[in-house]
Amino acid sequence: MSVTVVEPSRLPAPATVRLDYRPESAGMARRLVRSKLEDWELCALADDAELIVSELVGNAVKTGCLTFMTVRIRRVAARIVRISVRDGSRSMPVLIEAGEDEECHRGLALVHKLTRGQWGVTPDEFGKTVHADLRVPPD
Image 1 (cartoon, rainbow, N blue to C red):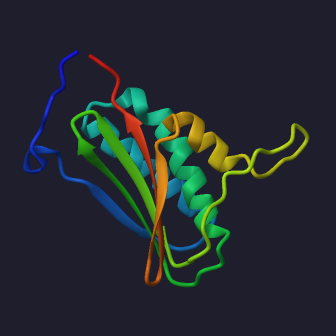
Image 2: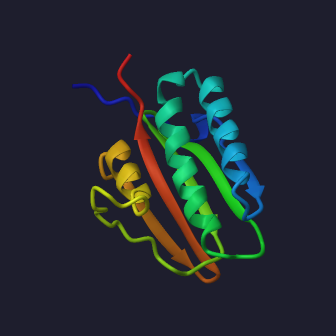
């Protein structure tokens, strides 16, 4: 198995958008993610990426913050796309196994499944950033 190493300066430019804490922001985030993946010719990741960003934005909306959230998509390596959402809440996300008849608590489980466990959270002084990594499929 060969590994392609790409210097960070040669990775494509990321895309970032600031969004209000409103449910409609998920649609704007999905459009950003799909557009960037199309630019990078990674359309095979678009459906999973849209689900992931919808869940992360939905969780941010539930925090009740009043400023704005930041959604970002970037290539962190040649074969890894990272989607991240920074919000102004220090409450950490919790992966909960929802019961079969529960309607909620499925979002992070879905993110966990789609990323094969490659997601995480980084707290900062004024909030946190939740990120999820998708692997670029082989050619």
